[in-house]
Length: 73
Image (tube, rainbow, N blue to C red):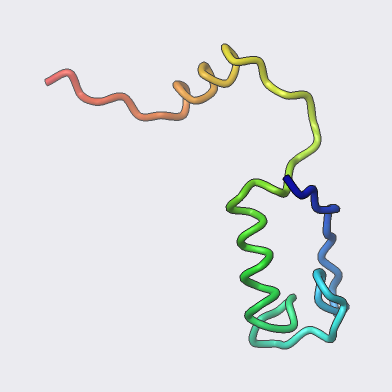
C-alpha cells in the first residue's frame, strides 16, 4: 500500500499535488486529473487523521451511536 504525505491547502498557491498554478475551474487543483487523484486518495483512505487507533469495541460503539435504529413497529 502506498502511503501519501499529507497535503496542505494553500490560499493562492499552486496545485497541492503537482505545484502547477491553480486553475479557477478546479481550484485548488490545476486540472481535473489532479482533482480526481485527490478524490481517489480520500476514497481509498490514503489520507488519515493522526491519532490513536480505536479498539474494536470502541469502533463498534461509535458506529452504533451514529447509526439510526429501525422502528420497532
